[in-house]
Image 1 (cartoon, rainbow, N blue to C red):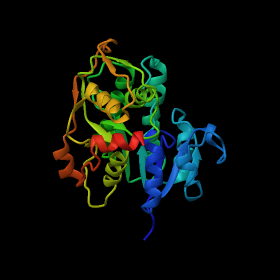
Image 2 (image 1 turned 90 degrees about the vertical axis):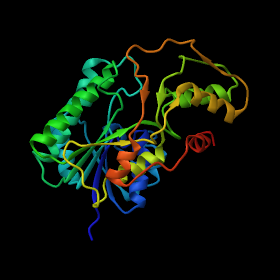
Image 3 (image 1 turned 45 degrees about the vertical axis):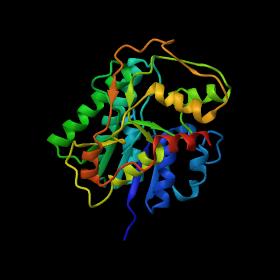
Image 4 (image 1 turned 30 degrees about the horizontal axis):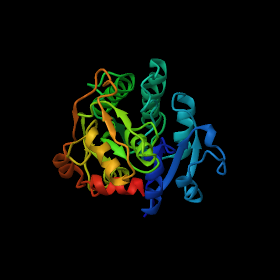
Length: 301
């Protein structure tokens, strides 16, 4: 039986670095779409997680915002499935509108058209989505919402097999230091206080290995999703930002403390984001396996 060929965009990102070794381990033929900066296998910028499996994966180079380069990359990879994780400005509160549109909107539509208009091998595209993208008042969320509108358009009018993976508050080793948990962990390890917002916002925290398992579950031949359908990847449980930061300090145990309310909450911040885990279990037969405390212990090491 031929291996399923999978093209991963955003391969060098936080989730991509965890996903690709997992796919290789489970027998998939993986191609990573990366920027030219990662053209050499031995470059210092190549993530160590991918260096370990570099002999077992293929690499294509391109820029999704360039349609011709995207078509060339998809033709070269000839994927059965595309996992579209690439996005710009996830943690950037000052993301420029033109940057967001080029990377997140145009990049996504270029990829979809390359898969379904210019090539014919692809039988499924899974697009990573952001919780609250239609209600959060920031440039990143707006660009992601616009991109998904086109995914739904193509899925429901053209019947292109495009499916959304709504990834809730992912965390784990190797996450950007600009994210809440790495930032709080750095302060706790230094026994420093941690200025933050009131921290009342409720989020559904999902460990990166659970994200990877959830994405892989969506690939199963036994799963039947309709074009334009979204699956929510989360635990179904909400924990406040303040509770998470307090957990970090408790597990590190070196002194210092969170300082809730010392920073303003960003305008348009959504109060609560929680996955419908029951529905997800029904649709793809998957649920999270790592508790928040265990995941945090893994991060702290």
